[in-house]
Image (cartoon, rainbow, N blue to C red; front, side, top):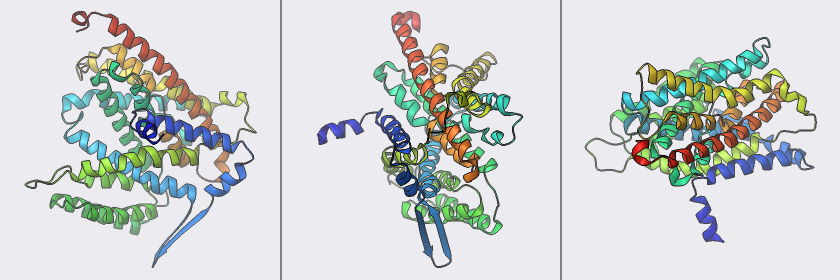
Length: 399
């Protein structure tokens, strides 16, 4: 039994399976007699006071502001590694996924705006369909095993990383409020300290994590969303130390965080944010502007935006298709990018804060579930058809 469990956690699809399981568990609990206990648990206050430092939040906000900062730290580490050593290290390699990611963020937003332009309240959720869930997307891709071209995996990973970075920029620019200049000054000082440590070749992660904790508190108190601190810390951790034969601090931290992020942080986030009560929900609500904008933004906006941007980039000689791929691969994979799930839910919690927006949050979550599930099923079928067609073509003809 233990061996089988260990084998399961080694699967590429395991994070996605656990995510969907915890999300459905929350959905079931929220619509059962256990719902009051579920809500009470999420509303449980947790108070930390150290001298003048005083932070009091409920469990839900500790997960969204605290644990998710660790997830965004992982994003920062991954983006930096890709920029220095990976698929984004040269202009020629980076341009194709960058163009794809930009198209895949802009068009879903335009689709959402098209349905909600006349409603200032629902327009607050304009960024919800712009995000891609990297764990789910790569999890579905992993179902094809060795059938999947390596270049397609690299393309999707690079696209998802850039997409996540775009989501961080959106959060920092558009979901910050009541800014505290004193806290911002402390955050800037902490950030400068981190990059000074990097420049001086400091290799010990303890120092980076201690200053990073100060940065997180400062950003939290500043009015900018606390998860931004995670990305800044990720960019400050050195990939390698010049003139020193030491293990890569960035890779060591990335490998240490990755299993915790995949099997604890993201499932906890999904469990805490997916419990939507459906007692007042009706099928007709799905055709209201807010859920329609989200669902179609994910299901249509993402593939249209990615495919159109890639096509135009190729025609304009701005970028070229990765080796071993044709445009049918890109079109099929772009549908999978409509799986928004955790990132879209996260932006929903920022777009509609406060108890008065609870109905909008619930409606948005349902739309995210529907859009993401449809994108995963249709994307899987489209990619399965593409890979089958590709394998039927003789190798010398395919190349």
